[in-house]
Length: 175
Length: 384
View 1 (cartoon, each protein chain N blue to C red):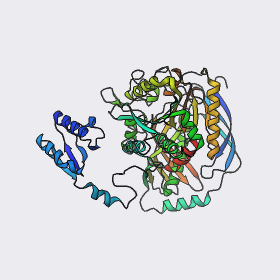
View 2 (cartoon, each protein chain N blue to C red):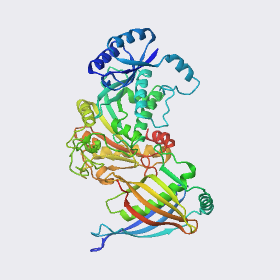
View 3 (tube, rainbow over the protein chains, first blue to last red):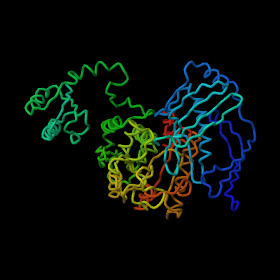
View 4 (tube, rainbow over the protein chains, first blue to last red):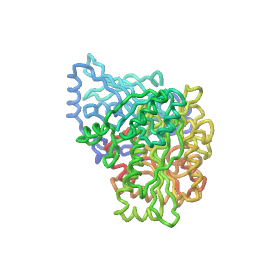
């Protein structure tokens, strides 16, 4: 407890690679929830101890595939109602997790627990520079209120530059 | 045999049809029950060959309009034989437990299960949902002259948690397939009766198939039909409305206008109350989270038999983990999840059922409510 500033948490975490279940990486983190201020995201400092798996080849393959699409990629409901994800859309779902991570971070308090429930809609936007752009509508499930709300988030991605959220709008209209 | 498509227009025609169906024991395909026949809604009924003329004459007499939907049922059946399932998705030995099934198929499944296992299984009517659908539970009971205690399990109180009804169906199948050969199960059934309610929130479940996959509540309308649904797991009479709820209908944790305001809640509560002195264990199955939750949600004060509750739950979690390594956390809702009131599990405990648990099945958020069908089998096997 840091008086007058907020609540600070010291965490020791183990990250599990969703695509390679036996692989774990240890991390430490410091999270500061600001006192009173409901509109500011918690401060996070993260240190990764160990190495993350190299995904260079898969990244290149995905990048080339998307860049060579004649029509921009558009998809809905990932996973579908039965939990199925077509293999070619798996990277799109993984990027959605990254994008959702940003939204979740920005909206988390000590009394929320968010998960990505489903990608409602994703649309690729072709760019003149080398980044891939995906405009997502993601459904986030919040455990305490049990609400599932749509959020619009745009993600830029590049094999070397990684993922960046470039724009974040609140709950989509008609929520 | 022929299938007729009939259009009753008046209440008298409806009544006549209901009478006809019950006295001639006709096979109603749509709706399921004679009491659901409505004026203005079409009806499909299979009429055995020897009765076809009699039925048609009776309809003509009352000026009830109809047409022949299927002129020869046998021909259709023969035509569809080479395929795995008939075009009507008939449910029997071919039921696929590793897929999610819509409510219509679950109803058919229950009928088949009772038919195929009549020495052990009886299907019972529990009540009706808001949208007037029948709620049934299956009783698995080995005939014996000694009185037996009861274990009750309900699934699907929240519409979007599809793995839950899938588990109830799996559970029933496992018991019935193995009770003769598995000594644990046969000993179990010698001393206990199992009551299984495969889908509690039927209206919500159907809505999640047809309209909104992530719907949670039931489908009662409020505020003149501008807002729908009560969270059935906040609607029971256990510290109702005190914490972890909303009094706003648009919330996913809306607890309803009062405790047991919902027909689904009342149907379950009335039955359990009537049998409470014989019920040893109350189980309610949810997803997701991989948790075994004990009372209470509304307070951190532990229940009187907390030690026993925790010990049994810990043993269950250990056995579960032994199968595929899946970790389940154990504890009271208030301590490891969040505060809530009006849950069925808390209510069951407060009326005197000693062992009362909520299971939150796989996973922990990767797929959440949309758990892929490949995970049905491992989830069910480990939970078994």
